[in-house]
Length: 383
Ligand code: GLN
Image (cartoon, rainbow, N blue to C red):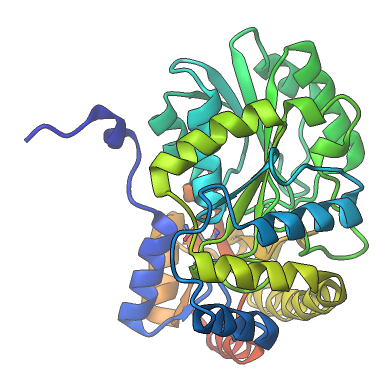
């Protein structure tokens, strides 16, 4: 049986494999980043209303007018960017499809695409399927800063794009304006695009501020901004993402999106519009909720001997386990925690190419306080 070569360079998602393992062993699933608590009533009710109103057929391929309008208004209110919902916004099946569609739309096979390491696991298969050659730039633990010289060396005439994920999964880093300016200057010098993954834009701590790359001088025209509703409104299973980009890029992205998926679920898009229209009063609540959860998991992990850098945004902790004197690598340790302790993380190596990841496991705190408390009890009981 012939299997296409492009599938051989990546494996199934380790994150979802850890979810299956957690279920098998009755472990608290701190592996996959999705909430185990209810979505807000206002978004659920809006979805029920949309189905009852018979919004049950395909939406316009690039997104229902009300949702694109709501995204445009929110982007204006939050970041001062003026977007034309008819020409510059595309609704996708989650940020996952958005990244794939963006890469397929702009990358020629053999083009170089820069990513920071640790990286979100999807970027590797996205590169394989679009033919991109990834070039890695290290975010140095524990603070996850980058070396500007290393970044400059990564750029060349072959660079088509750089992927910037801020707030960052798994590092919890929120890129500062100064860091983004360094990236922006290189994009302009080397005529490269910036593809951003801003899915955690509203999950921020300690007065960290989210700066969209598209708002930097000279960057709107060369930035493809990806975000979505999954994390902000705790609806990861609804598959609602979106892409903001200048009209020429949007045209290309929309063609790819159309033939990949036709479109995101129509009634859920209506509910998404209602949610975004009401978002401003809800975002502070979301932040406060995650700030509490971050505190609970950080203290549980630190008390159990993990070394953790406190995340500035998103909802993950990269936890170093060298202090625990476990004999084995991150994969063995993640399995051990899942099977014997009853708490499932993701092995750090899923986010790195090389050996550096094997010092870490990643835990998510996107879980109810009961789940986090039970995980803390199990960790405290010893491993
Ligand atoms: N974004 C979530 C995470 O990083 C879920 C991703 C996934 O299912 N692969 O855990």
